[in-house]
Length: 338
Image (cartoon, rainbow, N blue to C red; front, side, top):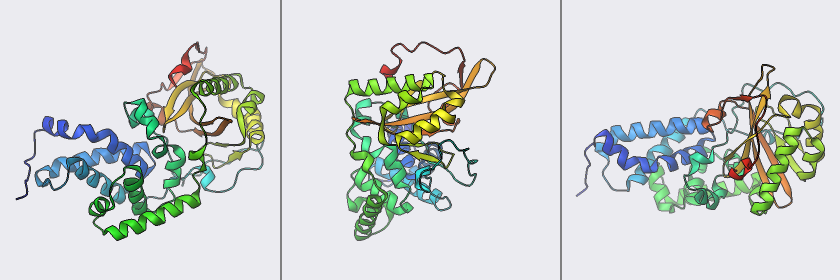
């Protein structure tokens, strides 16, 4: 006979369900490509779970039941939303690094990074699950239809059995296997080469970050050039322009990239299992205000990708100050936390 659970008190419900909140947030982020939307959908998931708890029959685990609610909430949310691209997913690289940037298109909703602090409380766990959290993977997922996206995440990232995914999505195991095959093929076409790059050792990583910060804070395009790979890429959503190759990136930074916030201190953070740095823009009043979050892809041969998210609403999500004194700050030992 099936067991139907009575709705618990709020405190008991929180005790039972809170252990899954962080992983559900990451699941919703993978589905939606937005940390802000993911937070909203997790809130919706918990509200729905609270209201329906007295109908939870215990045929699956509580974790599976919560994933079911969260996944269907994400699928509903995606029905009326377009994909969240990166600039490189919309067209080829810009040919004139010294040219003026076109105004950002208002109709595009961009992919967002997610702070490592929201991924897991354990840095070692973030490191071991890096392939499922990197921005390259999050961007590639945006190429998939919503249900294929759900299938691939549940099967390949979370390791669920096909029968479990079929039950969650109210479909057949054959349909799940077919969707997974199509999703894998489409991801292969989209390209995930970045995930196969060889990462630097810890000392090399710290040196690369130190040199990047020094080049940025000094507005030194030549120094930046020396730590970029030949095939490095710079993207700056919400601008559609992006630059491929270290020379193009250096020319852009020298002509206009450093103008807004070169010479300013940078604050270290981490996003999607990757090192990141926050930059601040001079406003002429003795204060520098939030400018962008730079997420870096590091390899043993240099920096392969710089993704600069010029979305100041992300600063609060990352626990970063919205402004810093223009006088700067001491950097000693700062990057050991990245």
